[in-house]
Image (cartoon, rainbow, N blue to C red; front, side):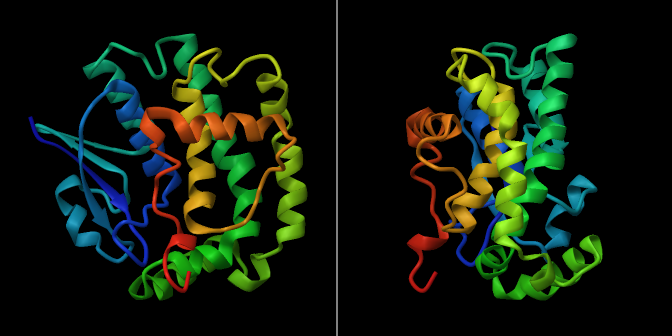
Amino acid sequence: MTRVLYELSGIEEGLLFSPFCWRVRYALAHKGLEVETRPWRFTEKEALAFARYDKVPVLVDDDEVITDSYEIMRYLDRRYPEAPLLGEGMAETRGHFFKHYAERALAPAMIRIIIMDLLNAIHPDDRSYFRESREKRFGCTLEELHSPSRGASQLTAALEPLRGQLMESKFLDGQAPAGADYLVFGNFMWARCASGADLVSDSDPVHAWLERMLDLHGGLGRNARRIIDIEGG
């Protein structure tokens, strides 16, 4: 069986920082599925022409081509039903909430903190594209978007729901991790790999959860290449 994951890389092929790709990496590990990874960069659109898509992650599983991190997680549950990620019915709908929470509450706060680090972590050939596309999206320059103090304040407020849950259980999905944890944790891997910024204090209940998530699946997150590991990063 051939299973391939196309995922975003930075200034080195081993620097993999996309929050959406990290969701899928953890989902595959959760299922115990091996995968060959193919580094991809923002400007390599033609490499994904076969998928009729211009973003990663893209998962190729035999003859199946699946795009979008959440759809990949749903596909994995259908194709490999053991060790569910999202479940079905109301459980799957709950997973959709965590997807939106990560993208609409956490990401806007985090990007104000890490945006300039992120620009430096991106391959030089991609930086013009990244700047132009993101400044168009946000309606301001990256320098204007960059506001660590404002981002930290936003993030502190956005993490309140996690704190409540993690004071009652070890993981967002209860006593063991599953889809909700991976949907949210992908954003923290984004920041961890692309930036040296500390987003959560050691005394925060979220910090203990982050430590547990980093150690999952043989230290998948903890052993990941980071910008601070790269000379000059």
